[in-house]
Image (cartoon, helix red, strand yellow):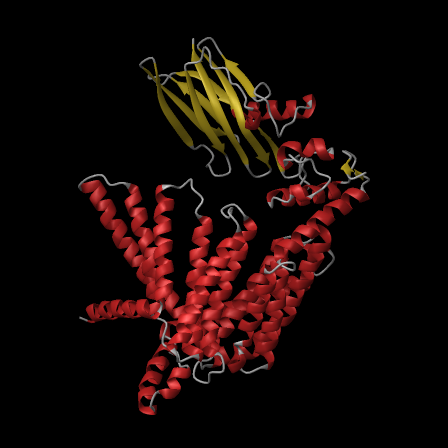
Length: 602
């Protein structure tokens, strides 16, 4: 009976959330419909519309929270809803037509959505004595995990019904399940989450009689109550584990602090993750009243400040080494935010915790608004950084790159990484001294005079060796005389030694088997007939050695292979097999390949 009442209460709450957030629900319906189109037409780019609807949904949620907190007139609600719709339309025209593979748009949209979620949590606590920021945060966190639980149960149930019907009764198109999951993720989950958001006190509550508000206050108190299991989890598990993590981190810093320590790639993520853990646990601990939580609130914010100062210093030193990328920009920005949070937590009472939301919103706005946003700053810095490195090595003359092979290893690494970053972000056309059709993988060696180099290893190219076929040159592959073509992927880092895979195929009514098995770190390809007798065996280590040796000695462009360069033949009196390399890669801990096998039975 209680379960039935719980479901009835949940669905009533969802009905109320639809009337409370009507514009949001319309945007969510648009998201669900758009996702359906994407499921049916996966090759189409709908990202611009999807991002617009998501931003519109979050803007309308924030608009509703502003209305509930500060206004009473219906006109104000309609104006805020209209403003949310106008801003969403403005976003649509601001992002431009191509969004799916635009890293800048994706990251900026993600930051904007995150900032709007923080605003959603923070707005009810503005100048409120009844709703403090840490309470609103707790309420949102409880709603989130409850929504995840209900959605997971619903997803499992729908999947079980789908597969049972598919296996036991009749075949179903897998897209049906994807469409059902879309409804759960795009409609049920967000609407259910909003249904668990309480009606926080605002201007309208000033008109409510005290006795009526007392009842509302009881409802809010229940919403802000910390479940016993969560109290135990935070106080007796998470806080002690955080203390141990802090001790390990401090010992690591003390024992290893020296010159290379500050540019150690391990340091930065450790410190960032630590800062995130402390901030989240502190906000949750403000809702608890026990000794563990009290000690955490008194001690750990003060430890947080020097830790994030370490992190920020390390990030600035990495800038000196590699320049500013958008990732490092955000790491530094987070360091600034974490320092502000540490100061607020250390020297102000919990009722002022909402100040960190203001800091987060301001820093988020800075990171996405030109000309000081992460991508404008990183673009200008990386282009200038590359130019400076080229000039230092006398490789830039009359605004043209002069290829040079005798460059120090450290500068090769820097130039490779910066050039790769500029290429991956689509900034090549903004670099005046690069060819208009420059491609970092096929043109790097000819342009700079040395192979792409990432780090010092046993391989001459730094991280490893690679080759790939140049499909842009429209290669012609002769197939005369061959009976069949088989496509094979070789990924050794994910396969267990001795693992065996096989492919069955037929030629002229005869059945054959192609097996691949790892022997001494490389696949051996074995061709067998229907009786299991071996017709041909080939160790792919020979393929790697031949291709990379020719690349090193013959001088052909290993990032731009022609068909002749990429073809190796092996044969005996029964079988001839041509192996066409689409791509090969070999590093210290990974070996991969993409091959086409052309087989002739003699």
